[in-house]
Amino acid sequence: MTLTNDIATLMKILAVDAVDADKPVAVMFGTVASLNPLTVEVEQKFRLSGEQLCFLRTVVPVQNYLGIWNDFSSVLRIGDTAVLLREQGGQRFIILGVV
Picture 1 (cartoon, rainbow, N blue to C red):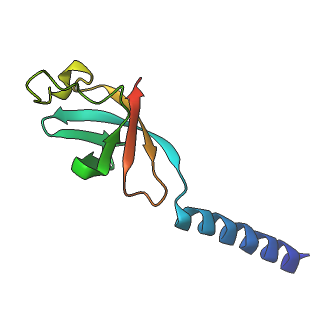
Picture 2: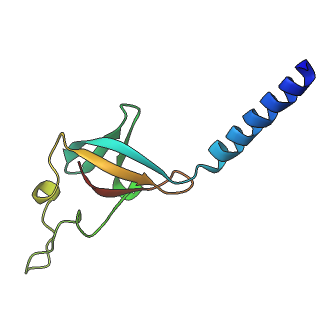
């Protein structure tokens, strides 16, 4: 009976490791730490900025009539909780919106 339990436990561990290694898409929450440059702190573990972040149209600041991008303060504020979708592989995060 012990050998069967050990094999079952090992199979569970291998399955979890396989999923974690692939890093499927995951929903995460982060706090807006700064607006210029835009930085989001995720679970007090790491900070995202620059090309790590991409946006839905509802989050992207609008372009004014001179073609200059407005800052994020019209959409995001420091301390806001942002809903993030981590892309497969974990290299980029999509800001879905603010809670």
